[in-house]
Length: 126
Image 1 (cartoon, one colour):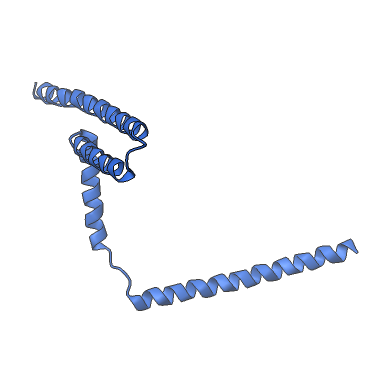
Image 2: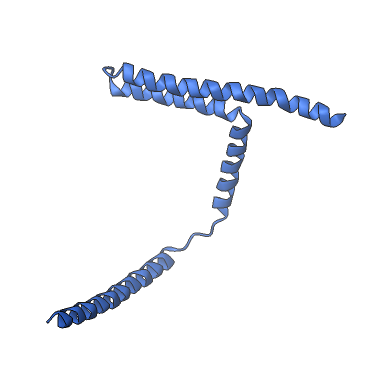
């Protein structure tokens, strides 16, 4: 029985999520329409309206189950990013120099192979 009670609590939330997503879709369509309809209005005012609409949309999205999952993912990713040990300036310069040298060596090898093939094809056509 406790399982049914838990699922009954989840079901109305799910129905409300559907209504929220419909409202989000309608607000996006209305924003696009308004931006086109008021194309003569200064771009700064239209941009401000777009920013306000985007903020409203974010608030509504965060009220949905998928929005909460996405927010939890973003917070987790930010926490993981803080754990990253970034290389020092010297390590970055050394690694960059190694990459540059390897690219030059590879370019020279490919240039040599290309010159060899060009010479072979040229000698065959004579």
